[in-house]
Image (tube, rainbow, N blue to C red; front, side, top):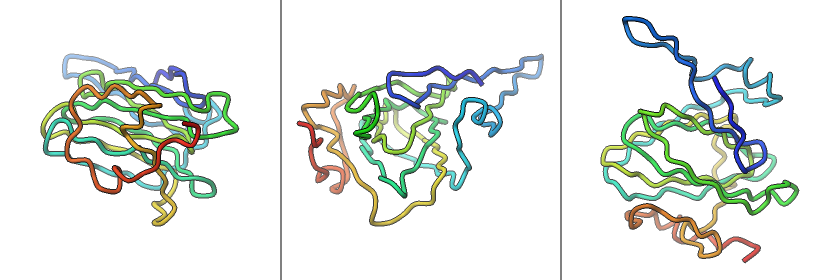
Length: 177
């Protein structure tokens, strides 16, 4: 696994290191030791799959605060997504930073998201499947969010947003706007 730091403290874009032969390839998609070597404690609690029927759907921007803040390792396994992060941690050196990247099965990239960073994505293809692993169990009632269309974030969603959940439309604007 090749870890690339991004503009949000503690977050990484992760490329696979495939071993290729005449049969195809093999690559490690997650390794507790490789995370620990970078001082990332990521004890896996859940692995979730989200399947979205149509392109343009926006899910998020979600996060949880301490003591339930969850780290995520996300990957698009079918279709494609435009993935967006917002650093919501006031004590972070990258507080308020917005980052986005395309994830798809062809690139085989994953994104590691530290706790306290809001996360959302837009599907870029019909029948997109998105996998995310977390280090915390889902804690109903403690999830927070910010509006996907908050003008102060200036997230350039590639497609017109569609089928946004009522909950995601009702999140507040970022507190620093």
